[in-house]
Image 1 (cartoon, one colour):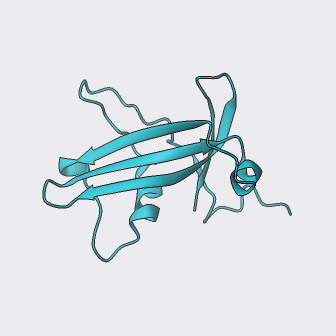
Image 2 (tube, one colour):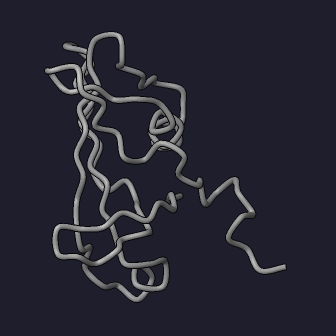
Image 3 (tube, one colour):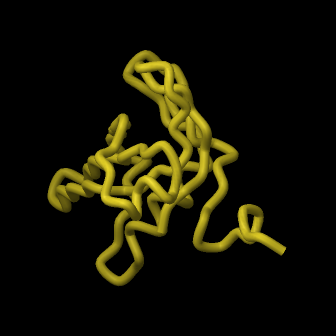
Length: 110
């Protein structure tokens, strides 16, 4: 599972392949921290190259979504289709309109 979303990194390199690498769920306080690792492309990821950049998000309160019986990683990718707000009310989600590489044939060769 991963998503495709070209984003220019802090180093000036466009990172296009993003994978959830950390998911810390605090069930008691209804908080979920998610970290996505960004690779240059899919081939770089499968060649065991290091991620170029990381992006972290915290889902809590009404944004908390994990369940005990669901696929929480897939739910994370689905959740990235919606705005994520910081404490000042700014949408910080750069992954809206990303392509889910599990369910999309958009990047497949004909």
